[in-house]
Image (cartoon, rainbow, N blue to C red; front, side, top):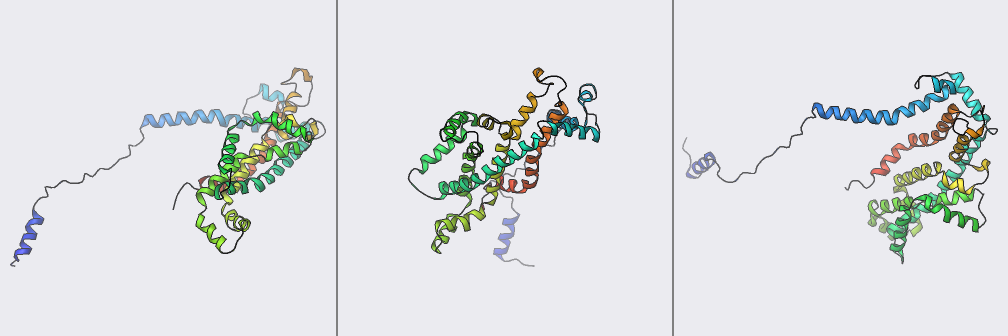
Length: 319
């Protein structure tokens, strides 16, 4: 077979070795975890297991035993259902079922403040993110500064303000300060400014929607993840708040669960020698009261974790 001069030249060129610079090919290999690394991870995980999980297990088992069994028995031994029933009977007998009143008060304060927070905080974050008005930057700066301040530092000014309008000692002295949630406004501001396309809102305005309709029909349905996130943080913060209700409310029947726990603690002869011997509130009752007050937060977290994850990941990626 006879090759043409051009084909023969192409064959010889292909056969000759290339002398030009070649792009180096590098492969990054992940070093497998060695025995020492695995041992270090096991030690760290074991430490956290001992530090966090074991106290929770003790707390779950304590209400099933008597106070003597807690002091003299094995710390992680299981008691009995009759022991749990006796513990609940003693706890419920404290001040004629005060534990249930405290839980009702916590629900009233928390959900009342949550409703006001969502009604005011979500539109406030939307306004800061997507509208332009005089003083916007100043208002955003003040929101950030107040968000960074410790909540305990605001209790005294809030008390003086509530007292000036003659609301101290009422449910509004707790609900209104609980509704002040600058962190939720900032979360909403971040979400709307980074996840809502301005062109989408502009198209709705061109179609004849008012600013309220744009917010209610377009922006708010897209903001369900951040609404759930703001609601969860506000609920947990208000439910666990101790100092503000302790200052605002003078009557034990108005206390929420967290302040009620302090009443139980001071009424127990196990932690307060002036409470008197033979008091019905001992370690099993205190453990059961702590579990009962934590249970609502745990239930809310379990039923809302999908919304929480989507809210936390909102804006993490860009398409």
